[in-house]
Length: 129
Image: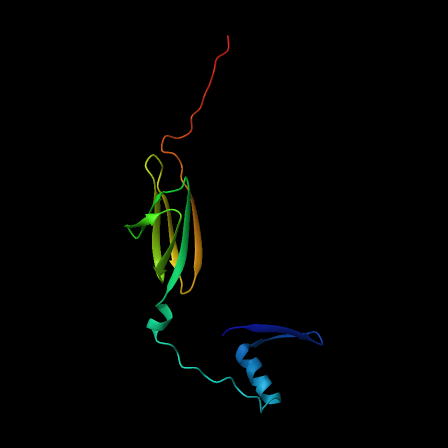
């Protein structure tokens, strides 16, 4: 850890690294108990798991695709594995809505897709005479 603490004492400035701070603390508190070291979890235990994804859309009842696979219609609550996922919300007559997100273990995410019409905005003009 490269944490530094700046200290001003009698107009003398100096910085202490985290290692320096620990050595000073151990000097003044030699009987302090160190926290027990816990063994590192295997990588599989850290990355495995699922999270929830709540998907809604305006208009409703749009198709939901996760990683190019159809998974249902909005509104929906999906259980996704940890890691990156590409979510697309589609409906005929509307532009696709897309997001890429990272799901972590026990996460609870929400996406609200507002779909825009493919036809664009209608502009009305008039020429009064």
